[in-house]
Length: 72
Image 1 (cartoon, rainbow, N blue to C red):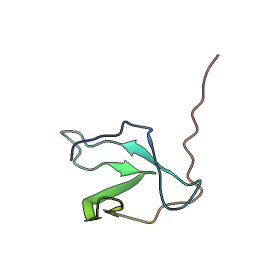
Image 2 (cartoon, rainbow, N blue to C red):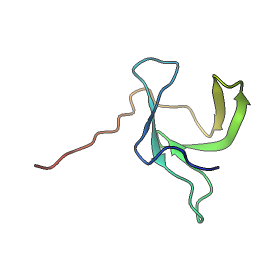
Image 3 (spheres, rainbow, N blue to C red):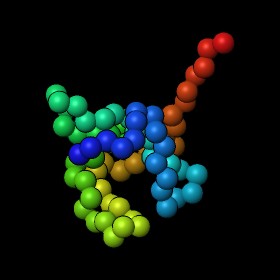
Image 4 (tube, rainbow, N blue to C red):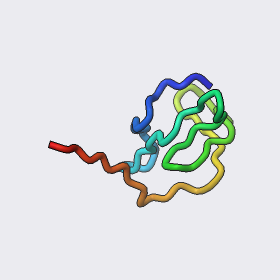
């Protein structure tokens, strides 16, 4: 899979105000990426050009947050 999102990127979902966060990207030593710390096990299970479905290892936690702390 060629990554088109970077680590920490937000991916819009059908559930408003609950984007998925790219928490890891596939690397040569790690084949899988993760969203909200849930491993994506299969890409593009369904893709009609407007909606894309991927298979994941577990359910997503609706309370997952990616807190970015900025130091001033």
